Length: 103
Image (tube, rainbow, N blue to C red; front, side, top):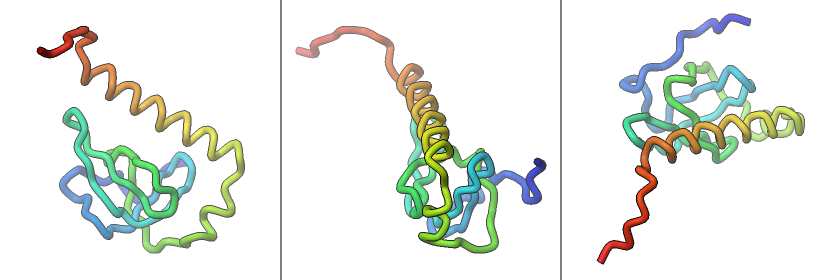
């Protein structure tokens, strides 16, 4: 299924923007933006999860809590796995695997 709206660039993302994550259909408002190892992530109010900004598209409106209730367990687990993979990738890039004790 093709996205109707283009993905958002990091410069377009702002707190308060209404966005959608096309892989799961999750929609919500951006409550926080964080940069981790050169990539920007946005926290969405409807899930409390972080999504890569370049994976989000603009949305006309949010359906709020109804959006949460409509997700199946399989969708939730898939989304959770994807987020975990993204965070593991960031962790691997951000550490050099050294064992310095510092001091």
